[in-house]
Image (tube, rainbow over all chains, first blue to last red; front, side, top):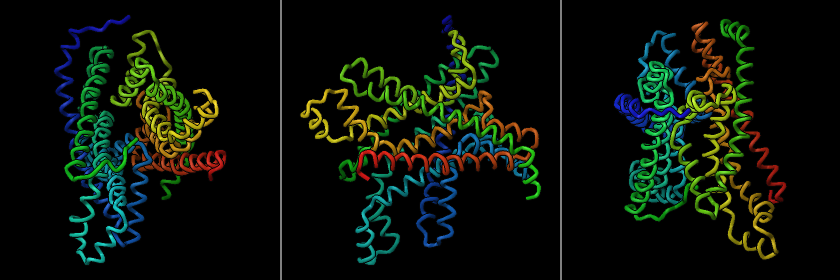
Length: 228
Length: 222
């Protein structure tokens, strides 16, 4: 019943590890897009233009409450309908990047909102410029609150990257499915994928927690709140 | 616009059928997730070390690997061990087991956020550990964890789209099929996006708010 074959494992492992590099790249690129786009989403909601604020708010809500797979399909297939042909990689990165941008914008927003109102008022009272207000006063206080959320979503985007396989991005999960289809053996490939994910995400989560403490300590702050 | 109305007329019923399957998957997944979350959450707080280890291992494994991998594992690998599941069953099983692991942390956090004095007061009036948990601690913990559970349920609804990949005919699956036959991608996927959005905003969010209010009234704090 339990016919786990080690030589088969050794045979497919190099191919899976190669695909793991693609998975990490996809997660990394997607995260970079999310970091930047998320900041734009967050700042757009702080402008005095009510219409823009409202539109961005609704977009973020829509992205956050609909499935990522559906968004990946949407970006990949809707482009060609209007004459824009996107490669699986481009479409995948755009979809996953925007999805997580919506989440990250909430993290930025919560971080900025966590700075006490008095700090903003003091900046106005001292007639500091917008630039100095943000860079000297607000951001140093907001960053320690932003980092835990950012870290969690880095692990999150990594764990969601298998969804990119549905449009044919050749990452880890895609490779495992291909091996399964070629050899009719699913036990080893899928189990190994699970093991690889675990082997990356657990240490990653742990080092993120360390990094958080280090940022707090180096900014001379105590733990303001705990996540759970 | 005219085109879209015709499109809806032709394929609307299929979208609705899909939406019903999505709701079924979400509902069954939620029930399982609650059961798993309460069980493993309490296991993680257990005074007996081996029980705690089992709980921790379960939570870390299911949170550390992705849902898609777990879904495929349950559907394609379990049959090799002699357990063949219907795709519908495999779908909500994976959803419940995965999201339950996230819920376990909410249960633990909720229970641990109840002030110590509540434990001491319950002990002082002669309550045993089980009665104390059931009548005093858990109701207060429930109040603390309901809001994050709302987010988790939306997460579950969204994750349920993945069951389409093992060909459960849910909303995601139907929109994919319609896209393949009509090539009207914007309409097919756009409609599905809107239906998901409406389900999250008009069903889960108000539902959770109602539950919160009801619980607050029951605990007479609201």
